[in-house]
Length: 137
Image (cartoon, rainbow, N blue to C red; front, side, top):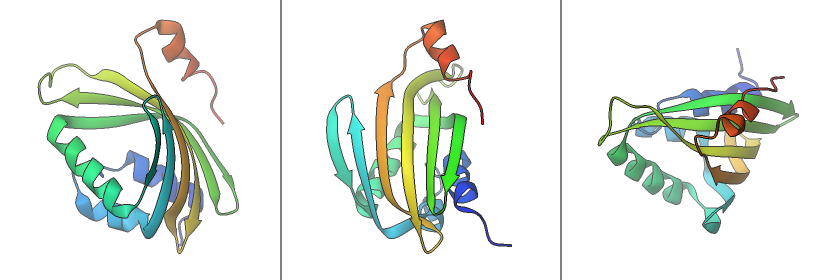
């Protein structure tokens, strides 16, 4: 059975992609372009950029868990809103909230092809964290 665009995007974020390089190939199109607006500025990333970033992440994190609040699909486009929680090599016993994301992905050939992403560092403010749990579709 063919996966929907929503299942593909959600599957990528829930996967162990930062520890398994084959998952990037499974979910991400080789001609991917990710347009990322972050607190540190704008980046345009390609497949090799994503591969390098994920390799670096695997050196720091023991676990990377998304808390997904929204996954909305319109044809081959998917919007996802999530927060990442991590366990670091330096502090493996504590899971910490690290960053909030909203991304919109266009799929091509059943893979994530063009993405538009906004991220902001998370903080421990209970109201902030609760805001990312309130709405689910």
